Length: 452
Ligand code: UD1
Image 1: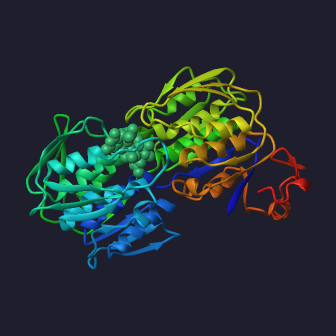
Image 2: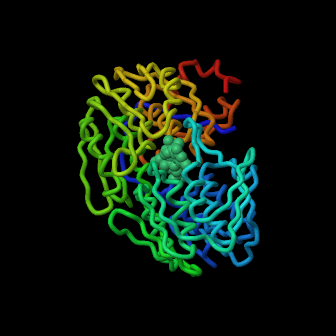
Image 3: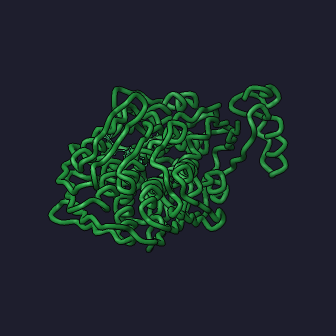
């Protein structure tokens, strides 16, 4: 098991590029099942992308990736499968988005229930109800869904009771090849939805907005497509939070500024200075951050739930009390226990968290609890005094393309060690020119052997 070691207390400085968005690439990978060939550019290197790739390959597609160029090529001409077993679906939440694509392509699908972060109950009723309106017969069995369509999918007027991102994506993909027109109301309007619409339209779908609805005129087939994934607004918010937390000054390139409209004012409230130009944003943090009066999450265009934990990490050292309210998922504070190990002062009540800023955080041995919570621990560790060790990194690998490399590029001191080899880590650190702090996670290094 790998462990991330972070020597905190140094301001982040410099420039880095944001990668393609995880939440944009995953629905595009399932929609690609409807095209004979797809070339996906700016494809982030993430374990969730590998999980989607394994599903495509299991379905009979040929997938190749030029890692250095982040270009993924998918050829679906040999696709023949319609089943996604538990071993593959359980790897990530987005496996459910293959349902719409399988039904559009084959008129049938056997799909196990999805995995993903444990953020409280994550029902799929909106996906199921919408697809049923399009003529899909769905049998819900323990552990999965057996779905079939008589003839072809039919266009329908669907109104979602909540703007679920995943349900909107599933219905958009399915409706692209349905007979007739589908209208979607109450749908999600996240930038990643626009990304998916753009991908589908470039492949020959007919999707447009009219009077607050999404209209999808079903076509008979989609054609070959070459598409570039939009920048990751959550990755951008994460590194901006890290710069804010460490009193740093960074520039992020290849960002889409309008997608950050709800996030940037929060950094200004914390006293950071922002400068923008075209697809770049620079953040310069004060010595001590101001607290955030009150921040609630909500569907786009409001503050994204995925950016809550990273921004909360920055507020741990603010000069006063910050209030957070999570209104999208039930359980998004799993990382708070880990913050407390570092001396943070956080009081939780239901969906609300009150952070009383402290003067300093101490290094600690930390466990990632989920993807964004894991990123928040990295930020807190970068801001803490001393060397922290973070494990359960599989959560971070799901959604951040080579996070250690980005942090190093911004001057942060991070290195990977294998668990149980803290002595080796110490040697590597010396080799790489890191200072010998004498203490790791609050424990004298000499005593840490075997702790991990
Ligand atoms: C997507 C994002 C995730 C982000 C979330 C909200 C991807 C791969 N993941 O997840 O990073 O945090 O949007 O912005 O894009 N709900 C129902 N019934 C349903 C579906 C959802 O009640 O059928 C509820 C969920 O329980 C949750 C809320 O709707 O409380 C939002 O979920 P949804 O928008 O569907 O999130 P995901 O698509 O899973």
